[in-house]
Image (cartoon, rainbow, N blue to C red; front, side, top):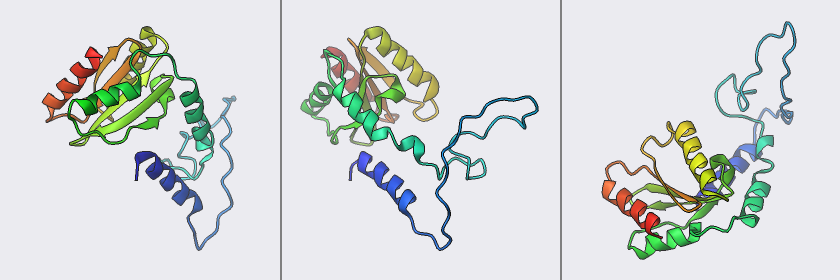
Length: 185
């Protein structure tokens, strides 16, 4: 089962799970507005029914996910190095690469992204941007916001495309090989 299927299956299992104590459907979260005398900020999105613990019964934010992925797939920029070309080159170099899957480019400020796993458990993502400046900004954004998720992430830009290698601690040779290969395309 691929990662996309796993994520969607998990969402559907949570959304469709049976319960002996039926609950009414959760209401969409309304944006909070500050008023004089308010009790403070609204709870963080995703914690409204779980006592401040991450997780949510509100799946409304996921409603547009598939449409966003489709929009990104249809509006890819004209990149010198596409995600497909990058993953094909990695496979041609003899590395064992799992099937690349589209991932949400918006989270990396990209027009389009795909990710795959290189054995042994090394994550590789390739994001396409309209300009080299946008690719640089996307890399800086990920360095700042995702450092805790992938503290060993290494990134390199080739034209308007950004490649990230993560979870490669202990496999420095593979990381260096993938980064150099991508840069040479």
